[in-house]
Image (cartoon, rainbow over all chains, first blue to last red; front, side, top):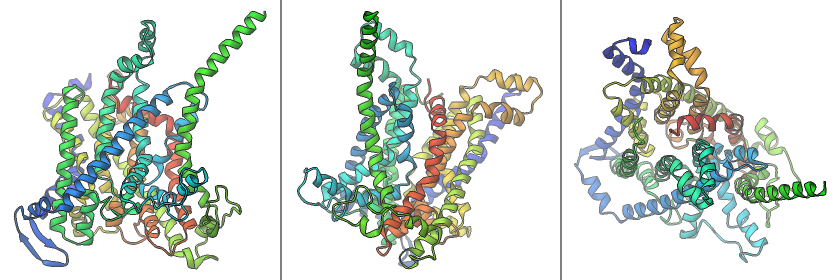
Length: 300
Length: 299
């Protein structure tokens, strides 16, 4: 009554007033820095020679795309992201479906699944470092004692197993978020839909295909977006677990950005790398948002 | 008589069999979740030489509380091996608690205001506003860190928790706004209108009517913000330098890369870093899922 009572213009003003604090926060701490970062990326600016601050146009970007390290880091980022996003989505759906069943112990499991969520990635990295340890690690101990491998291995010193180990550790850490989002979506599906489908003679596969999946699709997309973004920007666990190694086998774009900025102290080039990461994430996000938009899920 | 007995037994066994598969799956999931964590937990109760033994001691042969004691009394017997680590852990935890709680509270205040406007009013620019919020969430932290560092340095706020809180708020706010907007939309307008009829002001309506009905949504949004702030390492390590503002992940990472620190002490600090968020997650588990059911997932 009251809300529709006040005039259209005043309501618009009120709406913007309510959004003002959030807008200020986001402009100050996201919009302004990203513009500033772009500006820095067009300059020659190395903290080792702080007095040189020279506009060089797109030279930093030219340097990036002609450097093999960039393409290597991009390829590793893609591999890592695909590994993590696929695993999290598949495991997430399976575990959410399981937690939506009725069975003894479900309540405990629903609480237990939140455990990795409460573990900071730095601690997670530390934990897995000891599990993977080549001399005293629990993984080696376990696999040798049940006879799968005959001697201890350096899981983090082999390029292939290091990337897999890193992805495995990250998946364990980020899985709960996907599970609770998907579980929340599953709980919204009306039970009558399953009943009527069962009466029509649908089997478990058909139930999933024609009842569960359509209701889950939107949340699945949200999970895909969140997981892709977080996999591209993964940092903490790399810092503790592999530091980009061995060699450059786990040097993702984010890690390369960090090295260029804070080890080499090349702020110009580092920001160009950062911008490249932003553009790639933006590209992904645009594709996802378009799909959401076309499905009519974006605007409410 | 015997026929019905047989029938009940048959039904029960069929029921049991139907439960068997999910229970088996549940067991696998439980092991997957618990095993890595238990290793960390057990290490924190071991003596250093036991933690280094090959093959690993799955159950500590001489369990000890000495690692935890070291954190309670950093100047005690093991002062040399772990004093720095132990001294910084509790200040780090207090800093983390302030940063995470501050982030959550600010998020809820700003998110409620913006979320309410987006949920209840149709106004020009509403779609662009939603797009802007979502778009800002897409920016990777690593791209913002240098300009943020320089800006915060200019304001003289390096090594201040307030700078950290404001930074975290800007990252978590888009998700909070989105979640609360969706949650508010599930609350019938008639509740609000009734409050206005009774002569309530907008703020009174918000506080006494809307927010109580949005409780699960608020808890879910607050938890997400809390966790993001609690877990962050990248911004904390760049923006803080002393125990005045160092958060727990920075402290833990600090001795993770320090070879002189004992493994068992690191494990203990890791466990301590998990306790507060874990307690919150377990307490609010039901409300979080409930909040998401209405908030993050729309019809």
